[in-house]
Length: 219
Image (tube, rainbow, N blue to C red; front, side, top):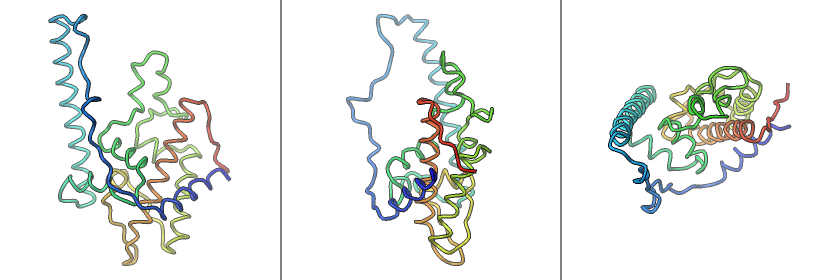
């Protein structure tokens, strides 16, 4: 069954340990700007205004997102969110995915709106705009529903406790989330299964978008 891969990934991840992720960018790769040969005073002024406006909007959007996560998960410091993503049991690739989700830097939906020849990629196969929350939680397509059903079933088999379906804010703050069921701390198992499910959905979405390969969920 194709969705057995979710179980396999999760079980392997539960047995692994991970070190801190180095998120620093090497100086040689920190390159920005425009070609001086094509730069005019008018263009420079427009670029500066657009950059400031864009950065301000991104900063406020990220800050609002973080505040919402901190409020729901009762976290006192945003530093906890970032540190949580760099520690186990979440694997490095899933950690990077969660980092981009929290920063609002995932290239989905509106990102493709202005790209010639790729405007159709802004939409989910169900017809909705493919924003992160829709992609990972809300879409009614069999792939997403079956992936979470498999995640829930695995959690219950491993822990012998009822599944706790994640909210969007819980996903964004997964790294420092505390999951307790019937006084049992199940955080490690929960983080592993949820992060692997998210990464599985992301991989299948990319296969559909860029390789025209779509995994059909069993009915």
